[in-house]
Image (cartoon, rainbow, N blue to C red; front, side, top):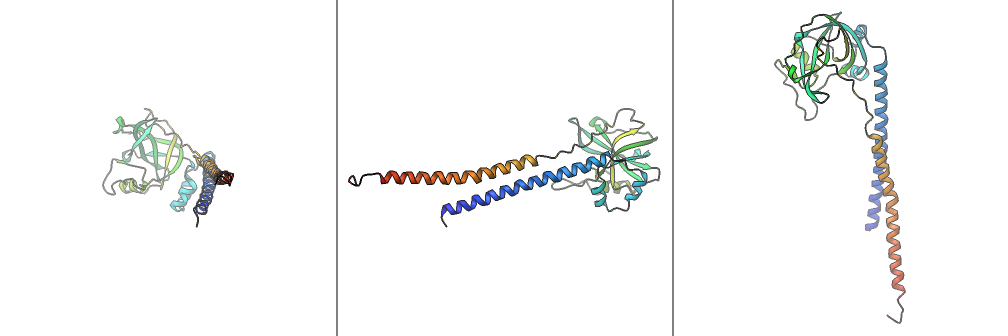
Length: 254
């Protein structure tokens, strides 16, 4: 196989690969858009209530997380203050601190964990002794587990803080059953008297850079598809000109 044919085959495969990657990025963009639309609809819909929480017990955890994460929820009950735990290495407006998670007992005695918001490092020993009833509004979030190279929390013992909202590990420490998703608080009545914890902002749902990546791949494919034939044509033209110049030498001179 000649070098020219081999190079041509490589260029063709490269162009096809870049076109494939372009369409793959378009598909990822479409998936992200669909997910963001579903999440926005969940946030805008009527909040779940106590009756809905009871119904969710029949769901498998995977189905529950898939279908109900970011769904608005409104419940009433009391915090179990003594069982609060901190989630470390969390920032708020660039300031390091913790998240405060507290079990919340509903009127039907079921318990769901609430992410009450952010505390500064100086408030590591924060204690809230308020035993009043609260009306909460928030969104459902799924539990978080260590993935990849992330280090998991110790599986035994009583921990003062967790690396992430790992509800299974938290439940083991509490010694009683909790709902398998937690509430990210967006508002409560009455409000926190001292201004802490600070309620977290809602997550931002971006479609990412998939669309721009797709455009880049299509541009690269176009450059290769158009540029390579031009290079071949220019090379062939150059060789043809050289041959003509050689043929112009007078025979008598030779």
